[in-house]
Amino acid sequence: QVRLMESGGASAQAGGSLTLSCAASGYIVNSGCMGWFRQAPGKEREVVARIDNLDTTIYADSVQGRFTISKDNAKNTLSLQMNSLEPEDTAKYYCAAKLCWKGWYDIWGQGTQVTVSS
Image 1 (tube, rainbow, N blue to C red):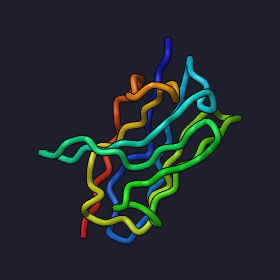
Image 2 (image 1 turned 90 degrees about the vertical axis):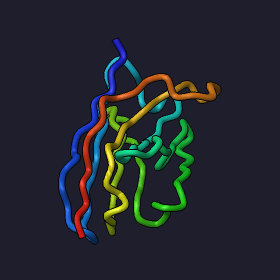
Image 3 (image 1 turned 180 degrees about the vertical axis):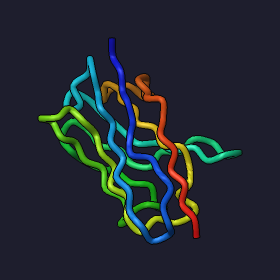
Image 4 (image 1 turned 60 degrees about the vertical axis):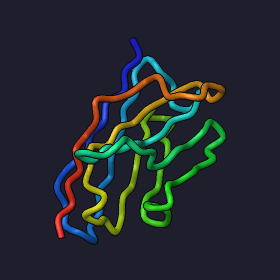
C-alpha cells in the first residue's frame, strides 16, 4: 500500500524556521515527481515546491528564496525547509507524488498544520 505521511508542522513566530518531512512507504521518492502543496482556510490548494526524479526543483514565487525542497533517498523521505516564515505561510501542508508523465498528483498525504504568528 502506497502511503505518504507528513510531520513537522507546528506553530512558529514570523521570521522563524520549520522543517517538514514526508515519509513514503510503498513508493520510492526518487522514482517520480513529488511536491509540497498547502491550503489555507477559505483558499484553494496551491503548489509550494516541486522536485522531479532528476532533482530539478520549482518554487512558487511566494516562497522562492525562503523554502527548499529536497529528497533523502536513503531514508526515502521528502523534506521542505522553510525559513523566514511569514504569517501568510499559515496553512495545512501536504506532500504528494506522481509518475512524472502524469498531469496530476495522485498520491497524497494527510497533511500537517503550520501556523505562523506575527
